[in-house]
Length: 387
Image (cartoon, rainbow, N blue to C red):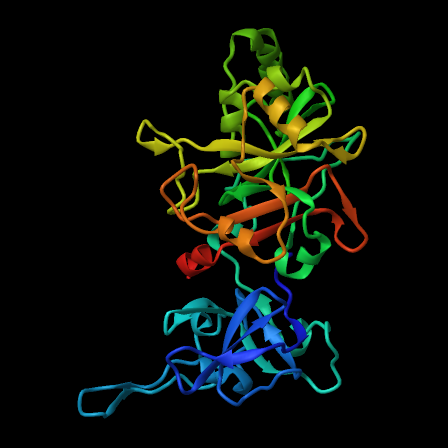
């Protein structure tokens, strides 16, 4: 939730909404357009900004979001508006929308008393973030033993990026950047170390088809397991690997253990995609099922604890037969928002809406507040589509 920052902001300019006598529009944090009721707020006022994907509590303060009563043709109420405490979450989720053909996202309410600009309002209002199906916690099926114990000699962190609205100012006018397409899928890292290939989702390392996590209790069960493992060892050269979960299907199909063995300690971070509804991209259909694909968006040197430059990412990915995420732009950064259009439109690798983009400095840079200079921007078209 790195681009989810409900907080107190100071309103900048407020202007009339075209074709409306009752609505106005403002831009929050230099990034988010929000439509307001005319006269409710004024320039310079401190307000609480509740961004897209926020879920507000079922309280009197937010009851105005509840659906209006349903009426028949005669004007009689057939279904009343749900009372406080019974408003479904879908009505309490802040979404992107178009009002009179003008895009808007987020909600503005009065700032809590005593709060100053920049203060978080998450706890004060009891806000949570909407969780999409593809973001649900990874819960392997019962008995699958899908997750594996973490390696002993190295660690991989949870990969996440901050959003443009909060940290776009870390990039200066004219600074050289690379902007690549953000793909809707699952974060995945693949690295060869400790004499084997490791595959990691956002949160867990995953077992391959040969992993055996059985813990027999009886003497006979232990003997049976020892015999199984002996046969596995003797005939491993003739035995084809089998993916225990979808995380291992691509590494096995592309024989990445053999290829990455030549590059030990280089973690290929990428997007495993094709599993999210409406985002098939360029994934082929094989035997009636969508075949997941993988595109590299970063390479991390585990031994030196640093990310490689993008040119190295492209070269090493090509060396091992992997594709990288599509590059949309190379050149100077423009602070006039003109490059924001690169987050919109159709994906370059499929007939689906573009999720957005990721921007990094060239060469790799560091910012005192952001850290590594890399941020993301989700497209407005993507937000409207997801809603």
